[in-house]
Every structure is written in C-alpha cells, then in structure tokens.
Image 1 (cartoon, rainbow, N blue to C red):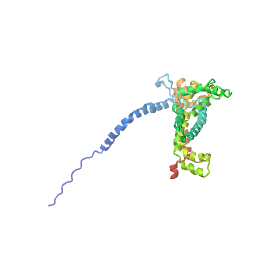
Image 2 (cartoon, rainbow, N blue to C red):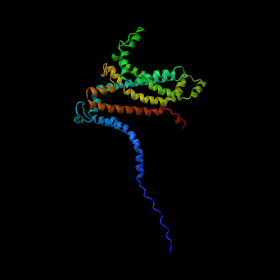
Image 3 (tube, one colour):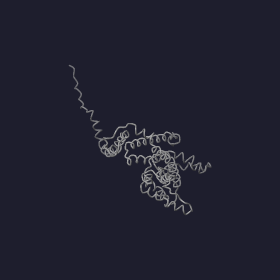
Image 4 (cartoon, helix red, strand yellow):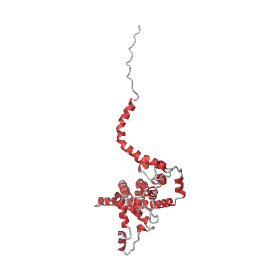
Length: 320
C-alpha cells in the first residue's frame, strides 16, 4: 500500500489590506501635526484665491451680499486694458520703480557686503547696523519718518542748507516723489546684503591669490572671480527683490495718504488695486487686477529663470 504523506500545514490567511491600514495609522500623527497648516492654507489662501477668481468675473460691490453679484464675464478685464487710464499709469509707475530701485538696491547690497567681508574691529556691529533698516521692513513707522525727513522743512533740506543748497519739497513734488520712494527701497538693502555676505564667504581665497600673482587688479578679480562665483546668489536676490519691488505698497500709501499723489506720481499698482477694491468698493474689478498682477509676476519670474541659464554658473555643474 502506498503511504500517503501528511498534508502541509495551512498558512494563516493574510489580510492584504493590513499594510495599507498600518501605513495610514503611521501617517495619522503626521497629518495631525500638519492639520493647522492645512486648515490655514485652505481657509486663508486657497479658498480666498478661488473666491477672488470668481469675483473677477462679476461686478461685486463690498456693500451688497455676495449672492447679489452679477456675472459680467470678461468685462472687468476688457475695461482694464482698454478703458482704464489709471491702470496703465500705475503699471508705468510700478515698472519704473522696479527697474530703477531693484538694480540699485542690489548694487548697494553687494558693495556693502564686500566692504564688510573683511576682518576688522567692530565688523559685527556694522553688519547689524546695516541690516537694521531691512529688519524694520516696510513698516508704517519707517515710512512716516521718511516722509518727515524729506518734507520741505525736513532734516534732509536742513542738511542741504548747511552747504547753501535750497532743497525741494521732495515728497509733495510730482517730479521727486517717486524717487523718494526709490531711495527708501534702496536704503533697506540689509536682507540681500546678508545673503551676498554669506555667498562671499564661500568664494575660495586661493582664487584671488592666484589672480593677484598673475597680475590681475581689483576690478578684474571682481569681474572674473567675484561675479561668476556669486551668480547663483545674485540670481536668488534678483528674483526675490524683483517680486518685492512690484509689490511695493506701504511707503506709497503713507506718502500719498492712500491717494497715489501728488498727481498720481506714486500710484503703484498695488495701491491702485487697493483704491479700486477698498475705497471705491469695486471688489470685482480689484479681483481682476489682482489676477493680472499674479500672472505678470509669474511671467517675469519665469523670464528671469529662463535667462538665468546663460549667466548663472554653478561650480558643481562645471565640475561634472
């Protein structure tokens, strides 16, 4: 008779859903810790953005319920580009401000960073003092002090009077009001200065020593060593400061008392948006302006990124 071998023991049934449950249980604490940020993202950023996108196609007025907003389609955008002279004027003012203030601010930040990239007594104190204006940021208090300094009877004109120079009413003169705002923006170069200073610390000293042995002067060392080695840092500061330059609002609001004066010379785009939305209560039109503003900033940033590959040099990529 054939001897039958015993049947192998049956393996316990495996619940294929168990790994998924285990993974979800492990991820649950992470989601709980992230929940305040996720709630804030939805309630403060995502939902208001979607609502403003909807309002940009309506004639919504702040004083009426949202349910009474009438759908007008592309009328707000058509009016913006074809019938609103203040829109194009604010675009010109903002572009002029960004094209002048941002390069000068970066140049001042780089120059001061190079001066402070040396070991001398009290260098830490000087770094803190130069960073202080940027630490204060675009506060209302700084803007008020700046306006008082550049009034006709301000301290700047008093300083010029010591040399027999008659000052101008800088903040109330349409020819000089925007330049006063530019000077305030340039004065707050502390943040990019710190970033430039950190980048300068990463430049090998051996490069300057070798260039000096080869007879390269200070200017050639700056052009052929400092700028190429700092190009990633310059790129980073350029992106941040360009966006910040387009978003200028507080100083223009304080200087003009929220009107964009004198004679609309300080009517920045964001200030014009504020006037349309919160003064004239045309929130639908202001929402359309906000979305155009977002699109333009995105395009400008994309152009900077696109052109960066021609002048930004990374040491890792060169070595590979």
